[in-house]
Length: 286
Length: 147
Image (cartoon, rainbow over all chains, first blue to last red; front, side):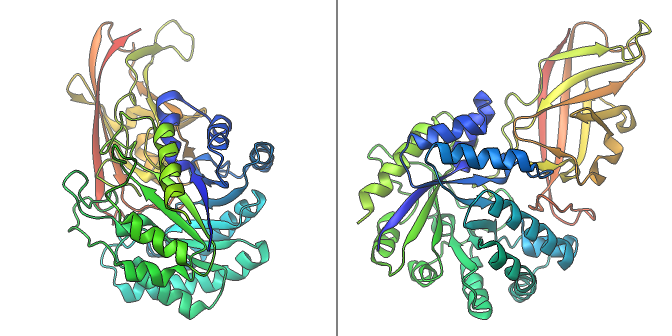
């Protein structure tokens, strides 16, 4: 089935740091890429505290540019949050951000699934996530917003599949992040900022990506560094796109270009590289 | 969360200037002030996400009770910063760092080092109040000129 392409604002955060570019100008740049949607990340959402007038203005501006806001991304880590505070606090934070997402008119709210809690077992991670999501999903349904659990780390996609099986709700979706399928290469070793001293993870299998797809209308298409041919050799892109092209459901591919961070290619222009990312996916789309 | 190990873009975070400030207009500066810009990769955090901020000026540590982190007019003493849950430092936003020192700082060049310890608990709305997560420590350094 077909897939659509969107741009996550993470892709262009470099512009805010280097040039002080604000959200309206970033939205204009994205509109110029003629993609199917935009995904607004917490950094750019007027939600600390929630400013209703500003939220409405963001929605209006995107609409004026012909750019549907497909999703949001909030740094709400369910398992870590419960460990550091309580189930109630985490559930309330998620409900609040679901309301913000609904106010922006977005259908998906993505949140990361990390496992960097001291002493955590996968069993506890699973049970905690299920417990919180059981509380939160009725609100997601009420607001018509789907939680897209971003699985960018080893083991999280498998856990998310198990959670989906338990919850049986279309308002809990798995958001496979290509980072979990990234290959360990000499130029970009497998390492992540939230676990600087952890042993290297293993890339997840393509079979697991295929299993996730049934529950993954919304995908984070993380890309780090394109080569001179416009290909991204750090990920198994041909295999992943083949699965997406053959999938029985439609997928929205939210590009997260990350090459601009200090450890990668900070000298390159994130807007130009993001455009190349769009072209890359379009070449593979069927 | 990003690949690699960096969690901020160091270059350009600290100002290149220090300014003496006479807040009570008595003709004598009682603070000096420098600025720091939020270039943290996931850039919105409550101030308490920064678990510790240590300032060295010309190689000497500045007592934390003399240092204030100021965001949108809100003065937070460094001693209390790890407790702040609902004042957020936003993307690209410049915060002011005031140091209480009668008479201000001498004219000329000063070597300023700012050591930031942030939590690896990645949740925007919840603090690592028990300091359970491994810390990330980053040193920012700048030669500053008194204005």
